[in-house]
Length: 383
Image 1 (cartoon, rainbow, N blue to C red):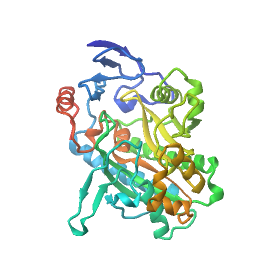
Image 2: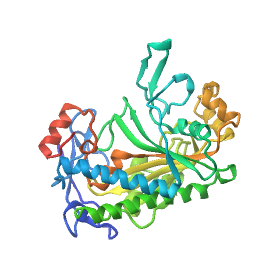
Image 3: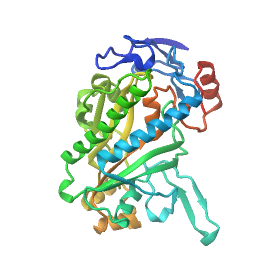
C-alpha cells in the first residue's frame, strides 16, 4: 500500500472551526491500494469495488443520539427556508410507478430499477429512481400556476449505485418543481433560481453554526457560475470529477451548467436522462467539503425539456422509442406545463451541515462488510 500526503488548500473564506482545529486544516492521508493516479482526491481503497475516505484525526463531534436530533433540526430548517425562497407547497408522492407510464427517471440510462409484480391486476411496478418526471405531471394535475411549485420527500433505491462516503443505494431527497412560462425558459431564470436555492443553503449554514458551536462557516457568500465546456477548456487534461474539484477548491461553491450533451472532447461532463432536463439549461450545485477534501454535489437542477429539446435529446441519446410512452407523448403534444425543478439530497445535506465523514452516519443503509469494519476501526459509526 502506497502512502501519500495531501494538504487541502488554505482558503481564507473558510472557517475551519467546523472540523475542530481553529486556524488550520487537518492533515489528510492518501491511501491508494494500487497504482497512484492523480493526487487530487483523498482515498483509502478497502475493496475492489469501494472507495472509502478516512480523514486523519476525524472523530464525530456529536454522538449517535445527538446526531439524530441534529438531523431533524437541519431538515426542518432547510425545508422551511427552501419553500420560502421558491414558493413551494408540499405534496404526497409515489414510491413506485409502472414502466409503461414513462415516469421513472432513467438516470444515465444503464441503472436497473427495482421491480416487482402486483397480485391484483397482474401488473408490474418499479421503485422510483427519482421523481423528476412525475413532478411535472403532478403540477398539471394539482392545478399549479406560473410562479407556484411543489416539493416532496422522495425515497428511492438505486441498486446499481457505486457506494462510497457520499453515495448510498438508498436515496432520500427533496424533489421540487415549479411552473414557469415559455418565455422564462432562459439561462437568466436558471441562474436566478440557483441563487435562491443557494441562499437557502447559506441561511441554513448560518443557523446551524449558531446552534452548534463546532460547526463553522464553509460556504462562500456567493456562488459562481461556469459551463461544462468552459470548465473543460480550463482543465482540458483532467477528468470531469477532477475539474469539479479544482474549480470548487478555487471558489468554494460553483454551479456547473449545461450537463448532458457532448463537449468538444466528444464526451459529456456527466450523464443525464434525455427526457427531463434541457441539457442547455441545467446544472449541478457543487461545494468544497473540507472534512473529506472533495467536491460535493448538493443539488442537480434545471429547466425541463420542451417539445423541441425533448425530441432532439431523445434522438441524440438513441432513445426515440420513448416518444411512445405516456409522459413523453404528453410533453410532445404540449399537454404539460413548462417547468424548472431539481433534487436536493437530504442525507447529503445533513452530512454536509453536520460535518460528517460518511453518509452512513446520517442514514441507515447497506455497506460492504469490509467498509463497516474499516469504519469501526476509524471510529466512524455507520448506522
